[in-house]
Image (tube, rainbow, N blue to C red; front, side):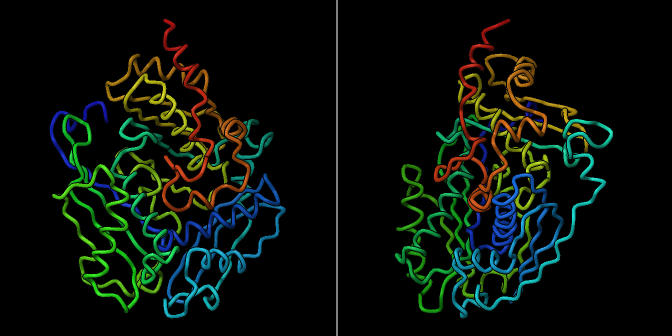
Length: 395
């Protein structure tokens, strides 16, 4: 457990990675969430578990759904691929000619009766599955995210930006980043290593690409964290012309560490994209981040990990844990009491209080679900800070 982690008492290096929206797995995440968003536009009570697979010349959309909505899977797949940037046949994967297969089927009635209010053994709306979920926040950045994943996401977003605005017109949609941070006494000290993989056309030299990415991507994103001693690896094989699904098949839900905290905090193992909000893999992970972020923003702790766990068909979590890594101004046990008092923990309450039944999920499917500055997600709001401080003063 984090309470026994001795790494903060010594120097260490921690690494996180991110991927661009054109990475094969992220293509699949975005398609899955685009399908779910379209269901929500027509039917806010839509239930879904949408999976996607992408390979050379083919996208397969499968899984289960229960909805009144009509969704044109072909149109959504092609629109999503075009928006990402797979719009030229020479990429080997193009929105206009890729094959699309849909194999969606109806949600299991056995699962449905545990989720629907008034049905099943327990009459409250229950969790859509068993499982454990984590939320995390720390004061390393103003977004209350760990610095390694925050910078890694910044690099991949910048790769997409300079591709789309034609500053680096030879870039293609696929790409990855990795950032290693040296820590001293549990605090970020400096950036030690940056790794970039940038999908590119034939008409650029490796030397030119490395110079451009250093100057137009790495230096602007790192800002004050850039230093002359950083080890930089850009396309370290020397070539990345073949990319996207023709180079590496993609699957929904295969970038769960990229989606969350870059490995800095534990992960329960459940992916987010394509899942409806009755599935606590998604909604409980969101509320756990909401809890942890408000605790850190209140100044009552420098770091906070929240774990929630559920049984399928049961509304109340089977456990709710808070760990402030010995940085809390009150005990973790007291935090747990306060959390159960002021935060929504039952699935129906989470969905209602965070207003989750709306089409906002395609935006989550690239560059992380947490700590975002380009969009406003309800689990990032800080509306519990005042009440947390007030209750923390009470014995």
